[in-house]
Image (cartoon, rainbow, N blue to C red; front, side, top):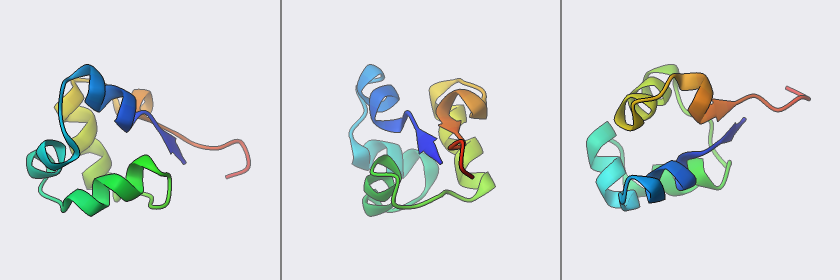
Length: 66
């Protein structure tokens, strides 16, 4: 799964820590998400999309091989 978290976070002038606080996770979780090392739960994915005011599919995209 790919995501646009880093891009969207920069556009909204949010640090990793600020985003983490908004969605109630540790900063390290945001780091792993941005590096595509971790797939979020559905709840977390929706929470992140909500922070950016976007539909979930505009933040997260499935790889063609998944």
